[in-house]
Amino acid sequence: MLKNILLVILLIFIFSCKKNISNEVEVYNNDFESGNLSNIDNGILSQFNGTSVLGNYNNGSFALTVSNLPKHDLVEISFDLYIHDSWDGNKTAPDGPDIWEMLVDGNPYINTSFSNSACGVGVFCSPQSYPLDYPNNYNNPKVGAYRTDLPGFCELITNPNGTTLYKIEKIIRHSNKALILQCLDKLVQTDSADPKCDESWSIDNIKIKAITL
Ligand SMILES: [Ca+2]
Ligand SMILES: [Ca+2]
Image (cartoon, rainbow, N blue to C red; front, side):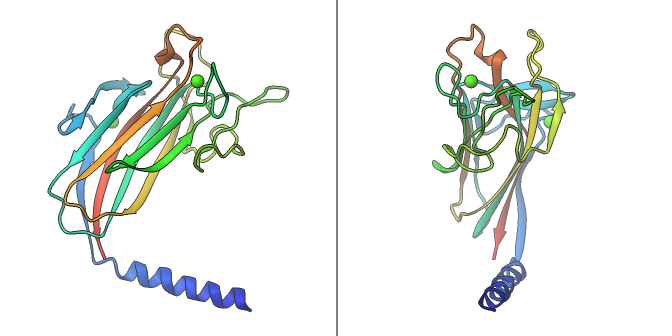
């Protein structure tokens, strides 16, 4: 009974929150097809799977600054995150852990690990933290993925792990006039001659909305 009452209260809360969104303005949208790297520190472009993407990065980061946001209470940040090749999740040195982070105005909103190895009978597959934060150790590789059938980024080596696409979407409290979106990795692969070919990431279709309640 108490459970039901709590559920009703929660539903009313959610409904009233939805009702109170009075305005939504898209303040940034980039699919990188025009090569636009304005306001992106350390922006690099590549072609992947027939589209232009921001990346790829290994032990790298970029920072996007969006200025002159209208008055707002929340922001919704969404993008495609490609995890390329053989990320090792929560393994330890020399293979990992393979950490990926998203920060807004310097504050971490995602601090996780990805594993992109193949699982099978008799094959050990290293766990990943995503969709939870590192060091959660209980998720199989590719949990929470949107697509797992994409080719690897690096064509120089035979890499059976391919690329996994995750749809990242975060709504956070934010009211500053400017927003800095930073993504970075702390990839570890000390036994590889070409770590960027072993594991890397890139991003596409960044959209940011300013929301007024
Ligand atoms: Ca693109
Ligand atoms: Ca690694």
